[in-house]
Structure formats: C-alpha cells, structure tokens
Length: 507
Image (tube, rainbow, N blue to C red; front, side):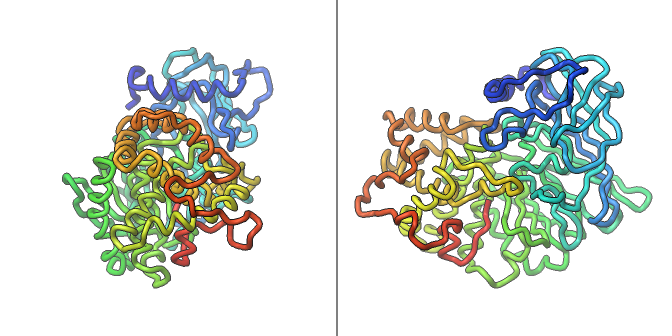
C-alpha cells in the first residue's frame, strides 16, 4: 500500500535537496535516452531525480537452481516531484519483458545502467504513479561487477551494498530514497525463503510455495535481503518480546546455535547504550558462502557461515563482529546516510560499538585499539581520503569505498569527540542522533550541528580537521600519541581489529 503524501514530506525534501546538486533536464520523449543520477560525489549516476519511491513490491520465482535467472515482477509506487516525460530506473543485470505505467504499456530502453521508460502519457508533478516491470533477475555475477545475488551452497542470498540492488531488481538505487517493501518468493518444495521484515503468509500449491514478507519501516535498496535455500529458521525472543529469527543451512544448525543464542543479550546491550531497537524483528542469516565480508541487511544481517563454524577467529572477535552488524541496525539502517560520502557515520559508529563490546565483554581496551588506529590514521587518509571525504572507488571495484578510513579511522573521530566534549555529552549525542533521525536519512552536517547543540560548543574547527584533514589532528587528552609516517611499511588496507585478531570483513 503506498504511503500518503503527508508521510513522504521529510523524505521528499531530503531527496529534492540532493537532486538539486545535479543539473538535470527531464527531456522530451524525442531526445536520446541518457543515464541520470542524483549527484552523489562517489556514485554520480546512482539514483534518479524526479520522483520519490514510496513502496516496492518484489516478486521472484526461483527455478530450483542458482545458476539460472529468476522470473521477477517489480512494482513501484512513487510520488512524482517533477513533470516526467521519461522515468529512469537503475537496472543493469536482467532482461526486461514489459513495462507498464499506471496500468498502460510503456516503451523502454537501456542507457548505461538505467532503464529509461517512456510512458504513454507524461506524469505530472505532485501526482502518484505506479510502475510495473516484468523482468528476469540473473544470479550469475555480471562481468566486472560486484554484489547483487550471492550464490550459496544451497541457494541464494543478497549483498547489495553499495550500488548493486539494481543488479537484482529495477529501483531508485540510492540510500537517500528509502521505501517500504513487500517481497514475495516462489520456490520449489524443500526450499525456505526469508526476506526483510515480518512474514505475511505462505501459500503452497503444485509442488512449490510462495513466501511473503513485509517491512514495517522504510528501507534503502542496498539493505534488501532475500534468502532462498534448504534452510531452517530458528526462533527466539529478544527484549520487549522482540521476535528474533535466524536463518541457517539445516545441516549446520547444531553448530550455529551456540553463537546465535547470544543475539538477544547483544540487543539488550545495544539498547542500554543507544535506546530501543528500531525495527520489527532481527536475526542472523548464516549463508553457506564465502563473501569476504558480513553485511547489515535490514532486520536480517548477512554472515558467512564459516565465521561461526571454522576455528579461525577468537570467540571475542566473532561476538564483536556480531555486534558490529547489530549496531548498524541503528546506525546505517534506521538512520541512513544521505550520500555515500556520509558512510563514516555508519561504519564509524558500528566499529565504535564493536570495540566497546570487546572492551566490556572481553577486556580488550578501547584505548589500545584507538592508539593503534591513531598511529595508522595518516596512512589510511593518504590511501583512502579523510573519513568524511573518501576517495572514489576505481571502476569495477565499487566496494573499495569500504576502507579503514571509514572504519577504525571514523571510530577514531568518535573517540576524539568523546575526549573533546566528555562522556555524558557524547552518550546523549548518540541517543539523540538515532532518536531524532529514526527511519530517515541524515548526513555529516546534521551530526556536526547536533554535536554542537548537545555540547553547547562550536565544534566546526574540531570536525573540519578530524573529518576532512589530510593529516590526523592531535588527540585530545593524549598529547603523546603520534601518527606513523604515511610511507612507513605496513598494511594500509587492514582495519585495526583485523590486525589484532587476524581477521576482518565487517561492513
């Protein structure tokens, strides 16, 4: 069901401000089709101007093998924010069979990674439109592209961060345009399908089942999750009666249970730090796949099964990574970055609580980790840019934005801020940040302004150096901390926690 115009005011304003950063001409139907974007500094062609998506209805039909395309239907309800002769969607890895706009057939073609739709009648500003695309969704990776469907040992999962949701379904693939989701998956008997949100029924007929899930909170496309496999869903209860569900390969259920039963206590720990869990459910998807990372997909975080079942990492490290992805439900999922340059707000906070959990639960001092990070910070800034102005990724390596400068480098900014304004003000800031921006988008300047409001101080100079400086500023309270020379031998691409434990991979 589409949202009302009144409920979209905040998101529409946010999207309009971002779209205003790029000069866009929504041209007449006779002009050549061109890819558009919303002006993101790191991904200039990602997202599209002229509308605000209210809801997605995604339907996938899984053929029983993860090497063949799924049949799919994507229905988008959106609010036009301009007169539209054409509508651009991001979509790059499937065959489009037909497109309808408000029930009428529409012409379409591709331009770059955009699906460019020409409706029979132009869509007027300030009106609703419904776009229906019948297409395929290919689980075999696109050449030179990362993300989208992840093929597991028994099916599929999704990893759409940062710009890969449009490799799975047509969408406005930018985090500034959050929306509600209904996800339906049809799969042969013997498979289980799970997606973001809460189950809304399962129908069985003709040797297959159709599973339906709905979100109760808006979600960015990069946080979409669908698991299809020979899986078992484990149920438990979290704080305040929160339904917690984990999705595991059935044959690994016994080995995974001791890890997954820790989740309710971890949720309670996070709630004690920043306030009530912001969504309708949570759980871990332990995928039988080697991705090289874990991922905070909304309400159902993606983990490599081997993180838990292979004796590679110490227990404290595995648990802290679980908390890292859990913390993202507040920082990154509920409060979503307005642009990808604001990524430090996601990863810095998740790394902060990962490190704080390791300190409180395993005796791994935050101070020691931050001192190591301080030593490496100038190298990280040289390699990846300062935390709030990361360098653009190389073509074909979009996930290169996930560098140490936005993990431990950004957590170091938070450590310095706590040193600067004191513990009580810092903790109020964390709670107010997730409370004030719940279910919305926010950027670096919002955080800077809120920090000044909470502390009662002008912090512009502090943040200018820590977020945008080529060199790391002196650490408040620790004049003895010294950065290493950028040219000093070392590994500039490995976060501090990975250096300490021998591991890595949290996003």
